[in-house]
Length: 126
Image 1: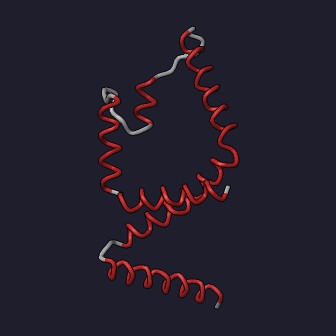
Image 2: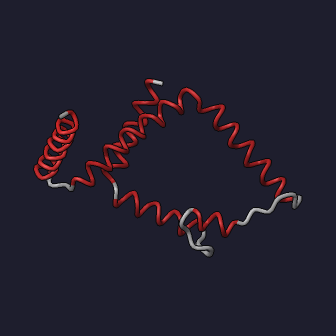
Image 3: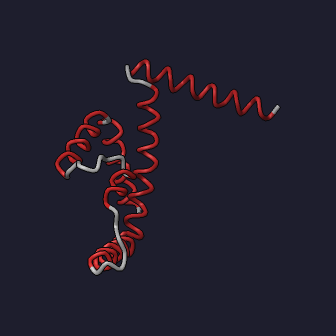
């Protein structure tokens, strides 16, 4: 019996989201994407305020150590594999990456704005 009420609750919530999306003339996937951006933006903003300096310092130090070790051939960084991991082709340069990011932001403007506002709210609370 409990499982049916949970399924009904989620079903009702999904119907309400779809109904709201139709009224606003946007897709339910845009609402879902914006909700994820809202939650993650708030959490990242809050954590950035609380732990930003140590995380930034640790990340910077790690990058410097890796670059120095790579320079002295203690380790080998295969940049082509890192680019492939990030979904980039091996011959893409920074300009192409920035163009792709700009296009993604244009395609997902609502989620970007919601995420940015949530980040600022989380940062101010943190």
